[in-house]
Length: 385
Image (cartoon, rainbow, N blue to C red; front, side, top):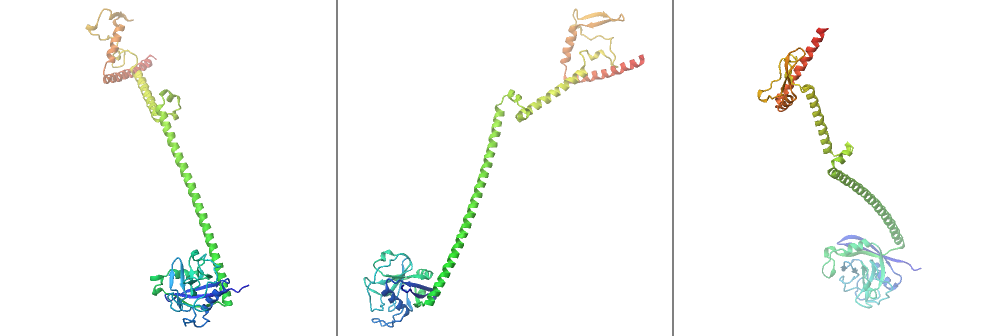
C-alpha cells in the first residue's frame, strides 16, 4: 500500500492570516507529486536556471479568477512568467489519469504541452474543458473555506489581486505522520461536529414542517367552520325569504286555516284588531240596549219616574189624518187617545235622525227615569205591606 502524502499551505490575505489549506497528493502521478512536495519543503536548494530557492514560501497567488481557479507558484518573477521545476527548467506531462471533476482539485499550470514547471492552480468549480491539457495531481482535503476567501478578494488588471488584498503563501511544508494523524483526528472531529449540526438542522426542519402542517390543518378547520357558518346563515336567510314570500302569496282563507303561530305578523295584528273592535262594538250595543230599553218613548214618564197617563203623544195637526188617532176609554172610564202603528213608525224615524249629542242626552234622561221608577216601585211595595 502506497503511503499518503499530504502538504500544507498557510495563507494570508492583505497581511492577515486567512488559514491553512491541507492538500493530499495523488499516488498515480509520482513525478508531479514529488516536484510539488519538494517545492513545499524547500529541500532542493536553488534552481539550476533561476538561481533562486526552490521553495513556495512567501510566494503570492498572482492570478485569481472568481468562478474558475486560483493560480500561484512563480517563485522567481512572482507574476506568472517565471518558475522552475526540481528537474530543471520544464518537464513533460506525466499522464491525464485524473480529471477536473470538482472544486478543490490541484493541477499543473503550463504554457502548452510538456511545459510543466513550478506553477499550479486550485479549481473552485468543475473544469472539464481542461481535461487532457493539464495534469491533476491532488485535492484540498481541509481549508476549502480559505479557498473561498481567496476567491472573493478584489482584483485589478490581469485578474491580479489588489495590492491591499495580496494573497501570499506565508509558510508551507509536508505534514508529518503525527500531524497527519492529528489533522485526520481534527478532520474526524470536524466531520462529527458537522454531522451533529446537520442532524440538529434536520431536526429543526422536521419540527418546522410539523408546526407548518399543524398550522395548515388548523387553518383548514377554521376555513371549514367559517364556510359552514356562512352556509347556515345563507340557509336561514333563504328560509326567511321563503316564509315571507309564502306569507305574501298566501290567501286569507289559507291564513285562517293555519294555526295562529304560523300566520304572518301583519295578519295576526289585523285579526287582533278586528276581534278588539268587534268586542268593543258588542259591548257598546249591550250598553245601548240596557239604557235605551224598548221602543216606548221616555216622555211617557214624568220627572219622578211615574207613567204619564194624562198626556197623549203630541202630533202636529198637519200630519194628523183619518185613522191616525183613536179615542178609547181606559179601565176607569176616562177618555184617552191611542196612537196608531203609523205614528210609532214615524216617531221612531224622527228619533233615529237626531244628532248624536241629543241621543246621548236622551239616554241619560232615560237612565234617570228608570232609576226613579225603580225606587218608587220599591216604596209602594213597602207601603202595601
